[in-house]
Image (tube, rainbow, N blue to C red; front, side, top):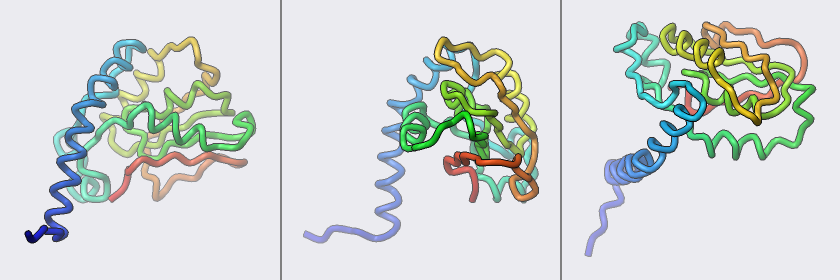
Length: 165
């Protein structure tokens, strides 16, 4: 029996597994949105929301929410006093990682996004978000390109979940 381990077959298998994971994670993401009166879960194709074609190629072509457990897992790996740090989410989309990071007492939380529509949604999400666990209220969505962004002085935590090509 020959088993096809070609790159194409492996890629197809990875996408099948990812789609199965999406079917599990999407309802959880929508529940987060309902609980906190925000909208982070809906996918957005970057070309359909006005991102220039050359910029779409530099991004990931589609906005897809970062899963809550993945953000929490990343945060649990930090061995720092968050009060000394600024948290920056590069490719922040609609701001989900910013919202989850606000459970920690960071000096400030910045979300850097280059797509105007996603940035606008993040601004509204930061305004509407309420959680009993929230410790940081300095949420700053920034519209800009990561290639031209200068982070604030001092120590920073950089969060990136597949934002670039």
